[in-house]
Amino acid sequence: MFCSILENPELFLWKDFNFGLIKDLNQNVDGGLHLLLVPLDHQNRLRPIDHVGWFRLFNAVKTVMLGIDGILGHAYGSQSEYKLEINSGEKTNQTLFHTHVHLFIYKL
Image (tube, rainbow, N blue to C red; front, side, top):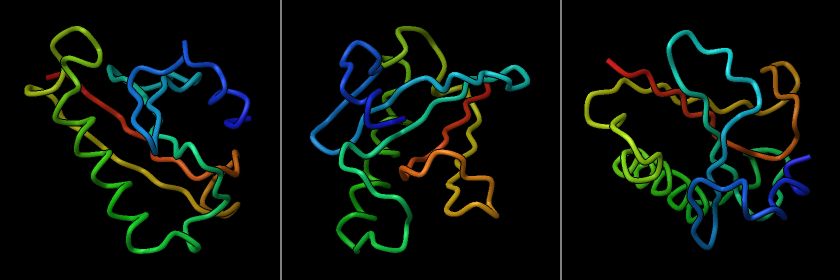
């Protein structure tokens, strides 16, 4: 599913050479916003990601979190709380087998 979503540039809130940020279709978050940071190359699970891949992933998370006001076009970032979640495997409730990071943002 993500592979077809990633082919539609209009869905991206932010994008670099390695990752894209999109809104999750399921916005069932108490007073928050649910975003997904998705690698542009397909990985089913976390295990095959090497050290460079992990660095790029968390650097992209940092970039998004620090720039969230500009990305969303309104105040969210500096006065917000965050939760990151990564699921890898069926027992962790992963339903889409394309590695991604859930970013939940709660405005204070």
